[in-house]
Image (cartoon, rainbow, N blue to C red; front, side, top):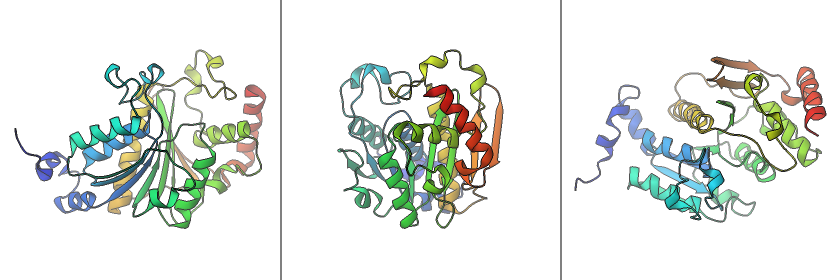
Length: 284
């Protein structure tokens, strides 16, 4: 059986990155919160990119309802811990990974350990998990760690980049003082202000914020991993321009549209506040 060789395994990346840059990626560490539909795809994408270190956090187990969108969800993994399945998949790609698992999930008590030594943080938490998400992004801002959140909407993705010294997650979304359901509405509105996905939503009733239910697609999750992977590469290698919040990004493959916008004030922007008002009337 052939032995693993890092340089050979990632050799097809070279050309889009230099050999020197590939070695830089090998020495980087990414903190990935969540190993579900989005987080699992993040891990495998970045492992194939050649990033050499990961901190991963998740406490959940695979079930049948995960099959439509989660890379680790299979008959052979039903009931298995997501973090163990995804860790094994990543190590099967690169056995030399420096990988630390946080099997109790992300908590306020382990935030600092989770972010220790991280060069970047990528949010793959469930959409409805907002309290620890807020604390994660706040701590990233305090530690000057770039952070990305990408969410699947329909057959596309909406994502935001939060860079040290720039607009913070809380400043953009404005969660403070809001009820849980209003936080969910603000999160959705802030992620995809362009609303490119709305035209082909055939059963709006499938969205139920109170019950934490929403339709999803595997394509959307894969787009999340793709855009987060590209932005991670640019940030870690300091290549190209990064459009941090209050810039937002949305790509929708179904409609064939791409939008990068600028939303000064984030959800406090007057036009955004109007959109949120209408969302509240529809969803509450």
